[in-house]
Image 1 (cartoon, rainbow, N blue to C red):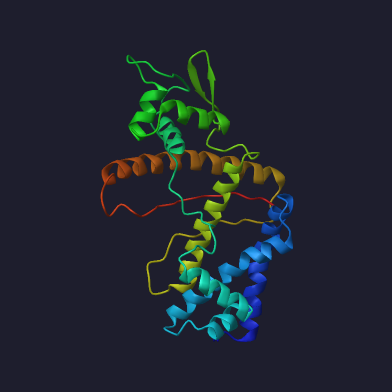
Image 2: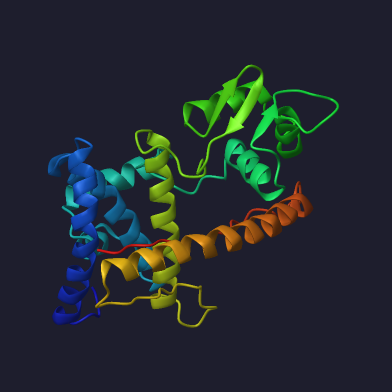
Amino acid sequence: MSNLPTSDAEFNLQQVLLLMNDLTEWLIRSGVGYMEFSAALKPLFYQQAIKELERLDQKTTVSAISLLAGLHRKDVSAYKEISAAGKPLTEASVAEPISVPARVVGLWIVEDYPQRLPFSDPEQPSFELLVKRISSERHPRSVLNELVRLGIVEEDSGEIKLKKGSFIPDHSHQESRKLLSQNLHSHLQAGLHNLFQTDQVTHLEEAVRADELTAESVQILTQYSIELWEKYSKQMMEHALKRCALDENKAQAEHTFCLGIYQNDT
């Protein structure tokens, strides 16, 4: 079914396996083994095979899906029945809106509010005011409880303190895993779009690499990158919050913008 030569297919498999080596470490450390993972992959291969057949304007028969996805015909038939009944094959999704707590912290940083704020005070900026500027539907106390749970803020004597570096979640929480998967998902989507949608607008997806460096040089470059990102991300967040406010309640406001950065010195 595929038009790719075997050598090209093998090359691309090796590239994906480079990613899987790291993802497998994540799974193993989280208590997920091969059997659970392979079972969870089946419906994903099924759905992607259908998507590819539709792109090629070919019929989504059991045989065609089975051949393209490498799945047993019995599995394909079972998935077709589940889909026909309107039941989801998988609930895996990382396309979630930015949470209210995250937007509250973003506004706190962008507008240079003091590191310590009263929970509620009609005479000066307060945590309650921040929450109400972001959402009128979420109770400030529930937002505070979530930020405390994530280790982003702490409450002391009626004041809310934003912890230094609080935009980096505590890695012991599931929220940090979700954030990582969202970032990886967005990065991969941008790269795959550029590979396969060559007739469309190219997404920004670049990196600066330098090798044969001393540990001292890496440390200097790391610090410089942190300083640049702190300045640049604040400016981007400021613009993003303005656009969110302008687009609020618009019927066409159903798109997501994501700009990320990472640093690695292995």
